[in-house]
Length: 591
Image (cartoon, rainbow, N blue to C red; front, side, top):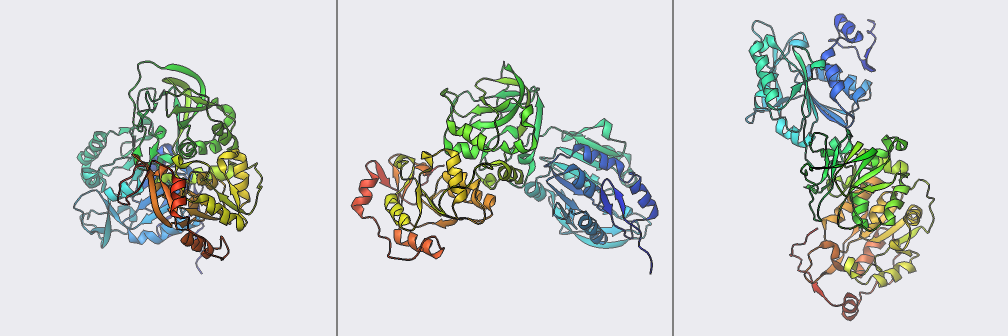
């Protein structure tokens, strides 16, 4: 029986034996000379949390070394040669990279009128296999499916492109729009298209704003970068929302007036907007790039950027804590505090106590500072937005991990196993559930504690939420706090009091962080709004009590029994009070 050659290792990556691993190639890999320029450029430019697009996987070594050493969030690799697929996958499996690298046997094309397949010419040496049919060389031609660059840019959102496609780069760059890509590592092939083709490739890259990194580039392998202002919503999948920008002498620009959308944020020392400092809600940018101020005072020290500081608890707990994940990756003793931009620059009252309490629960004792005028910190650490409202309600892995490790870790569970989180004492001007006092009485009979979170410190709320095993709640912002400590062993029923996208944000938060989706109890008969208002958070809903009971019985939250009676019309009207109008279900509401 023929003895298998042992694996060869390069930069911590084991390369399994294959028909393509010749003695010479093994020697080059072992000595670190295999694709050395590409690998050096990639490792110098790929940052933790990046998303890397690789064109031309070859044996898979370059992508594997990048994935194992540079710690990108994800790597999407295209290879046209179908014969290489099993060997690349074997390499990924051997190194535990199969979940981080996605491999596709496709030809990635930038042309708008791309065909469904492309002819790929396979030579005996995989290095010479190409889309281009070399003259007088024996090849085997196969048809390979194509993929659209535009679709990959939209869906995968790469930060770095690594390209080694044996001469196909000239055709690819001719129609390529590399939007959002910060760095390119590319090998040119003058034997295929000559020096003129090399110049055309380089001119195309320069025209898109890329500049060669001299210390990382050679004549035929370029590492080139550009400044990218990537103004796109944060994603729980990664990208800029999982990155940390470290800035020397940046310019922090607070808003100069109160409004929903406020030009504000962080500029580099040269005046370029830092996209990591932006705050998004859904797909809307709430903090578009500000103008560079004429003057700014120095702020001594090193600060952590906190984003927009809300004084209203529901938005504080969803939009002012979104960068605290970075605490798990920084030495807090080296920071002077957390620097925020005020949401309402006209308010100068002392900060609400719950802000300090929340930071304490995150194991953070750093002081809070509001930038009320443009300032220049000596150093500013700017984490991306890892949580919030919209798609990012699911949170990034780094945000979820930081919350799991830090939030309320010293708070012991204390309280009953059944808990009802009430809104009945907030008043109708904060949105309400009509007949909630009656509902509380029914639930109390079933052994539920009626809990009014606003009457308790955050630590007490966390203790109650940790202790409960069945939680029923009138849908609202208190459930976001629950989401930070809930676990899969807890059942949560969420009684809807409005029809709003905010309900989905709460649900996505609970499911993603706890690992278990809440039960939606949507039994609204009618909804009222304060006269002249269109904000969904102000909606007052009347549930169908019999249907509500049936839903809770079906999921084991309450035992079956006499049907819960519906409040009478007089009772509803008395509780509602004056100034409310019945909502037309077709009416358009905001927020």
